[in-house]
Amino acid sequence: MRITKDPNKPDVFETNMMTANIGCNRCPNCGETRDHFKCLANGESGGISGGIYRSWTEGFFRMKSMRADCYKCYTCGTEWESEPYQWC
Ligand SMILES: [Zn+2]
Image (cartoon, rainbow, N blue to C red; front, side, top):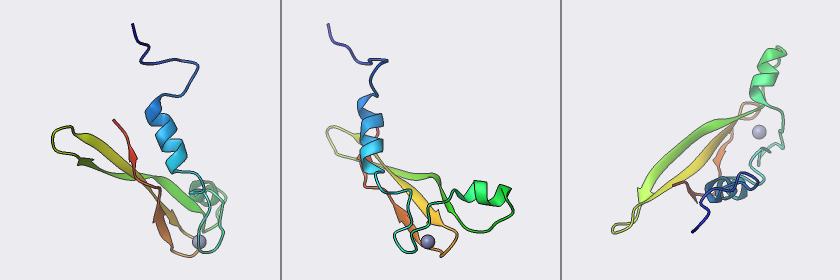
C-alpha cells in the first residue's frame, strides 16, 4: 500500500511549483512587488501580474508534462518566468 496524496502535505507537483517560483514575485529589473490587479483596483498603474504559464511535454518513452509560470511587470515592462518544473 502506498499513499499517493497526503492531505496534510502539499503533493509533489505543488512542491515543484513552489520551489520553481521562489523569488518570482519580485521584478528582477525594478524591484516591483505590488500586485498588478490590486494596483488596477486602486486606480494605479504598475505591479506584477502572474497566473499565466506555458507548458510542454518532455521525454519520449516516458512523457513528462513541464510547466513554467510567466510574469510581467507593468511598472517597467520586464517579463520573466519561473524555473521549468514537472507538473504531471
Ligand atoms: Zn519592473
